[in-house]
Image (cartoon, rainbow, N blue to C red; front, top):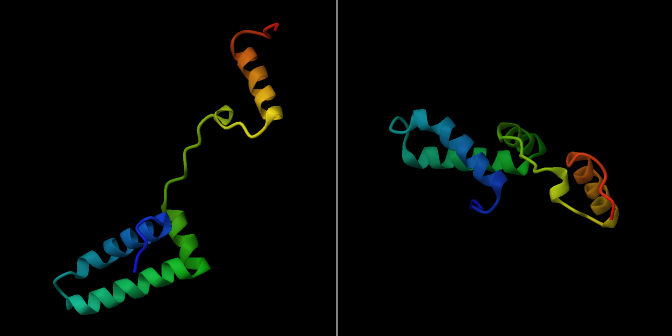
Length: 92
């Protein structure tokens, strides 16, 4: 059974749906369901399958690095970057 909260499984299902679509109405529904289940299993259960599924997904879009602050050192470097972007260092 597919986990709808798992992006990998959802992507694998979309790939399989697209691959199976031309055979809808040509093969018995039970056969298509068995083929669909087998291909989905291979795509999510094997390293090569997972790699294939990930390769079809869009690359994530990261925000600016200053959107994520991990610790004080990163926060300080963000302040420097903001100062430069504003036209020079600010005195505090």
